[in-house]
Structure formats: structure tokens, C-alpha cells
Image: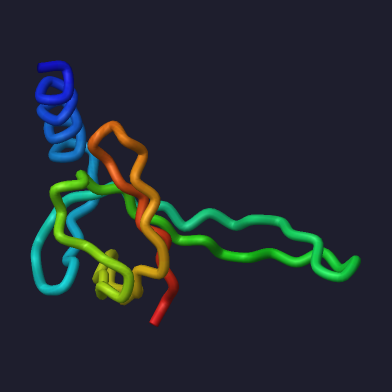
Length: 94
């Protein structure tokens, strides 16, 4: 019962606040972020872009899926389910 309530709440929040995206030609709504991470590589400071998309786990996405978001195309390189009904997709620009 709690999981069903959480899923409905997530669906409502995503429908109002999410970004329209296409995953493998299927229209869905998710929360897109493209954070810049500061990383030290071999003693040198570097910035790395890490785009992610959070969607409901009912969305049909897998490693290698193609995501079109905000006029750019990305490839799913990792899935991070959070056990609450949402999954974070780590993306790489194509």
C-alpha cells in the first residue's frame, strides 16, 4: 500500500515538475540534471560533466538506451535504482 501511494506521489510530482524526454522513442517525464563535478586526476584539478535523469522504475530504460532531452541526445551508461520506485540514469552525450 505504501509503495502504491509513493508511486502515485512520484507520478504527480514528475508530471508537474519534470522535463519531457524521449527514451528509445518513448515519451516520458523525468528530472534532468547536468552537474559539473570537480575532480583531482593525477594531481591536476579537472571538471567533469555528469548528466543524469531520474525517472520512475516502470520506464523501460536499460544500459545503451538513447535519451533525447532538451535538444540533446544521450546514451544511458548506468542505472541506479533507489528502491523507492525511482531510478537514476547516468548519461553520456552522444
